[in-house]
Image (cartoon, rainbow, N blue to C red; front, side):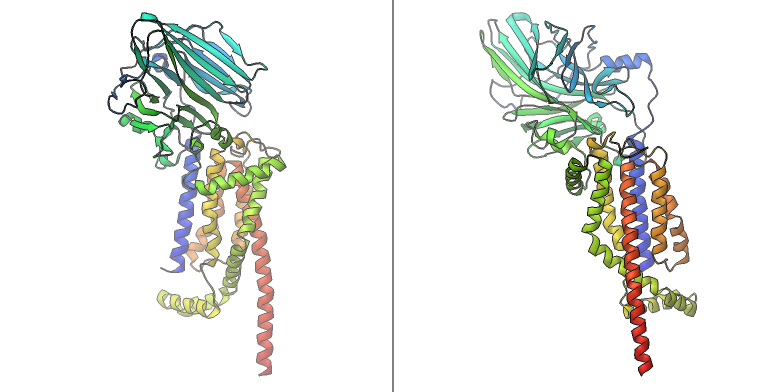
Length: 565
């Protein structure tokens, strides 16, 4: 395989990667879907069984792995109560429906819905656009699918307190009383949910505590590169599989039925996570279900427990509803929950990059400046490697006259020309592939940067300077892409032209092609590319200038030796 073919392959690979990332970006921010008919919306809004149809299982305290039915009943109508319970903390505004005692709304007060909106982003919701709710309850004797809870208040406020407890009470038949307690803590996106069962009846009560996340599937575009879109869907973790995605399509195709010691379940989307974390010292059954109303669920059911007459028992789980920030996810008490941050297949590069950039940001206070400084550090790290490549490119530039002579001498005899060209490379100790090395090094860093920007909620709505108010969004005036095209054009002029005329003409259009592809890319990513190109231009110019001085001295020395002879 000759040099031309290798360069063409590298060029095609780079274009393919950039094209895939561009399509991923387009699919990440699709056009808003058209409103659905009211009847269909109502079906989506009210559908979804409250309790999974799972057998109670064995005696209390045993980890049931065999007597579990994977089936679920058809979705039941669970209309929204006219009186929702509202809880406000320093970070969340939570809405609980007394019908089932489920969380049907959770707004993140520190994260606006859009850049220019003051309305907080609703991570959990149940409205005309669909639903994304967190359900929990009991499966057992005399337990209805939807308990009608009561509370002493309709609104609760954390105020200046450290903790806030909200008690919901349900009285059933045969002397069973259930108190469902939500506990909120200042500075946390975590809710503790406890089911307290009191048995004042005459017989033993048996049951299981379950947690479930239900969501309507977001409407997105589809294309050839759909699998490169930002992941939105379910995921779970077990000791064997620390992070396992379960896409909406997989949920529709079949039910998950997985036993796990500890672990967690979640619904993921860009920048944010909702996750149920059951007790880590017990066996839990993870399951998924699909309903024909476009509702997808992932849940967890704990082991069976019993309450004797005159006694009581409690079961609990934690619900996280908040941003995908590693430090917060690490404090939830769920192993490997930080893997919910989708850093892509190059996570081993993306995570260290973000750690360094976050450290820089703690000093400079601006994510744009942090990107610039880290880009400089990356260039410094690869400086010796790049310098060697640029020296090779400078040597190739000085060989251009000799290459032209060979082309003229051999004409259309490509085989003879290639042979003579390789002999020239060997004689001059030139490596025609040396100039490709910087591009090869940049590709994984570029992809890692892309995934990092798409996964890091810290960069969401982060301003830089002047017109750049959101580094995770495209440049509204396309100034950065134009600057990037200019830097690519300068870089191209500094590099030796390809020997093949067709390839040389194609290279002329490269800056324009990349500029068009980068129009809708995150401005933070384009900023990285601009700084990287600018530093490369300076380094390449200095290396070329230094080599030319050495080349002139060498030629002058050779000329002096010839005169003496």
